Amino acid sequence: MQGLIELLQQYNVLAAFWMTIRLTLISAVGALVLGTIIAVMRVSPVPVLQRFATTYVTLVRNTPLTLIVTFCVLGLYLFMNVRLLPPSVDPKAQLFTWAVVALTIYHATFVAEGIRSGINTVPQGQAEASRAIGLNFGQVLGQVVLPQAMRAAITPLGNTFIALTKNTTVVSAVGVAEASYLMKNMIEFSPQLLFAIFFLMALGFVILTLPAGLFFSWASAKWRVQR
Amino acid sequence: MQRRKIGLAVGAVAMSLALSACVAGGSGGGSSSGSTPGGQTGNITIGIKYDQPGLGMQVGNQYQGFDVDVARYVAKELGYADNQITFMETPSAQRETLIQSGQVKLIFATYSITDARKEKVDFAGPYFVAGQDILVKSDRTDINGPADLKGHKLCSVVGSTSAKKIKDQYPEVQLQEVDTYSKCAEAVAAGSMDAMTTDDIILAGYAAQPQYKGKLKVVGHPFTQERYGVGLKKGDTELQTKVNDALKKMIADGSWQKFLDNNFGASGYQYNKDTNPPTPGTA
Image (cartoon, rainbow over all chains, first blue to last red; front, side):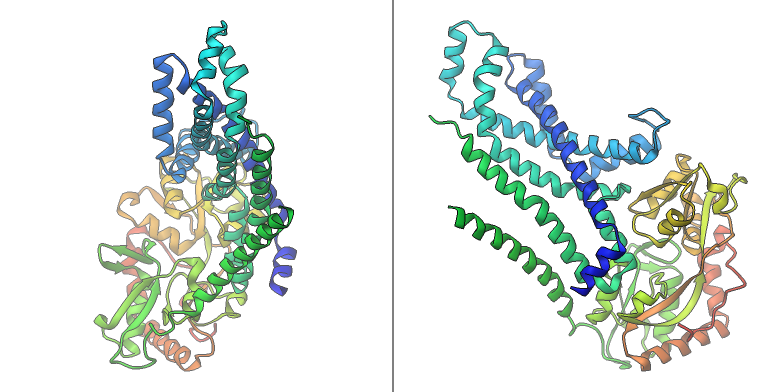
């Protein structure tokens, strides 16, 4: 207990977890948008889009996240000087943006698969009936299939969200000052408090992921499609 | 339903507690491996780094570097033959735990003597006094110290003392932290980073690597003091004294200088003559 208080006084634990939260939320929004687009491409009637989406999911989902992060930050940003923001912007923000991009690219594949599984829960007959009354592909998807698919996909999307929260620790490898970056600093400068450090980090992540898990369980029950 | 959810929440918190307790418990185990103190018949397990060129490096199934040479010398003085030494990797974050649990007897792994660490382990030595310095491309003359780094891109490792020093004292430097020093060295050699910083002897190890030979140089103005010690179990004063005696002998008979020349000769690295060779036993 003494150790925990000492750690909290000596290090800015809240700032580190705030960075984790920002990484998680921004990447989650990005992954949801990109993942939805990929899922729609996969069920679209255009073979080129289908093939592109399938390739993207297969390729990125099976690449380790560390590799994607290292490639984006070390490869593109540091070695090839590819910037996503104007050069005048602070390097810390450039780094953050790249980290978010890497997390988004990776988790979008899981979002896409989650939504596709949701789409599969919508009976084929509904899409056929919609087409029979004259709706085009966009209307079938936007007004009939996706609203039901999204509700069915809440549980897998929640799982992806929780995985994303924990996966943000990977970007400490390129120096983004989030929770596990702080942990590495704590281990270096306060090795005598090793177990307090582990406990603090475990507690921090439980505080982040547990309510998220409860929320998604509640939401999936509330918005369940009655059939 | 409500009660069940609360039960679930409590269960999950308990599980996280149990997990951290399990980490805590894990360190206590494995105390039986280790070697018998002073016994020339048993083996001695020595902790080194496996990924630090010039200091502790695994090449195939061989180990080489300054730390390894010093470790072999000390082990010999303690009465262990070469084939009785077992080397084990001790990453920075695990050094205290591995000593406390008795999984390693001694640690020679660029292990700076600090008060925080002394709460958990004891040190013999120092056997080398390093200092934070800067590594740049050989043809650069505009960077000679941390004050020249303003506006330049500097690379260091996440959670290292060197990175913290720069952040605290030279906030105007563009510091990029990555997970390993080899990535920094690669970035400096490729020109995407202007410089990298850590202890001078570690930098010299990279400058002496075949692929960087002649391409990188240590600027040679150390601005901190890191006293490298030999980590050992807290309270084992007998072993501490023996190791200190061995280190003194090593410096006196010229082996210390020889080990440095063998490992860093190629980099043109000059160690800080004001602080080296140090007096072992002042840890």
